Length: 280
Length: 280
Image (cartoon, rainbow over all chains, first blue to last red; front, side, top):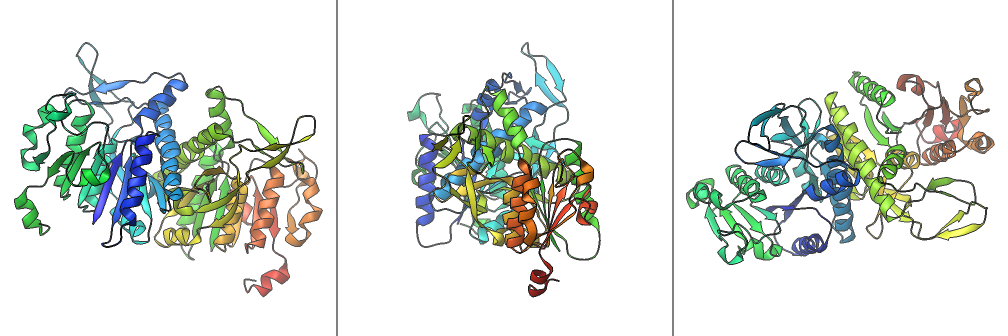
């Protein structure tokens, strides 16, 4: 059983709880449990940037997707936040719980190789399209699954910061949800959990009773209209994970055990595909 | 042939040069070359702390050794500097030179396990002894050599940030030179190079012609009086490395090839010890 968990990465009670749940999950006897933890770091990056007196800017694509505007200096702050503070803190916290965690950034051993978008189209505040050239954001093209498999086989729990390597040897900001999806796909993971601060995909924003419990991946298109802001990337990540061979993706804010048994939004590979794949 | 190199870690021409030299060293055909890179990060930590409006403080032990006063917030800044910025930047720069570098902090996989000094004696400005209890500095007690050997055997070049793990699961600031020494000892390295910004140990400070070329480790005590400031920790590291089984330690600012052939200060295990060890 291979499980990939994506968490936000902000310090706090929610993170402590997930780490406790991971420790409990791994302490269960029985089948072989392989686990990889992927984290984000947007909030701390913004906080640090403000502390250093720098403006935090966002780019909106013509399709309406938003992303951090990552110029050279912002990339440096992002690296410090995700690989320096959050990653080492999560590793130490897990070690304190008796789990042999090992942190990696995507640059390490070419774990996450990405294509830099050297010219990206973004909307100006008055809705015109402009070209941005000094952005260090990337799209993951390859995951070094061999490295992760070796670490898992020797008893380490990989904790991964979404800082990818470009083909030219640059560090790149990549989306954490989509990084987790790419990693889950490359490891042929059974399940991907995307822990977040909302119950899952809601038909009506702010109404938890409108939670959509189950989506068959082939009908995903019918549901993307309900996704706002960050949820759009989570659904995109879910879709990429399923395409990559992951059986189930869970999105929500419930405890790990409950999410795994479907208390959030679960996106599933269609039954036919699962059967053909021999995993059904 | 196993070689451990310690560099300062500050971005700049000197670091670029060392990385070029490492690439050249590893591209040589012939014998099996295992290399581990360890870096520091004091300068960037100070720079960041100032940028965030925080005071940088130093502790002086009754014996005259100085170290960074690392309270909880300073530790966070230290982690961001060494593990977030410097480590990932060095890895990306090496990857850009075609070398499969993989960065680790000492917390990762219990690479550097250290004892936290929960109460340390330090001198006040007026030379009285005070006890400091909120310092996150440690003394390395164990190196996970198995992890490094596995990574080296599978073709990775480990790049190590001196951020150790305490027995209680805390992150600790450890001295980079002594971390490199402990790693070199644990790997049974042939040579340790401590690259710095002075030619080596000088009899007269600021007089490069007073360079001490060669020290037999058993006569080390006769030379420590010449060491000032940071050089004292480098000599201490050299002594620890030799005790750990390293054959030669080179300290200096010359190109790698020249340092390895003795152009800086070379501290050597005594001939008798080397012969007994079967390495002579």
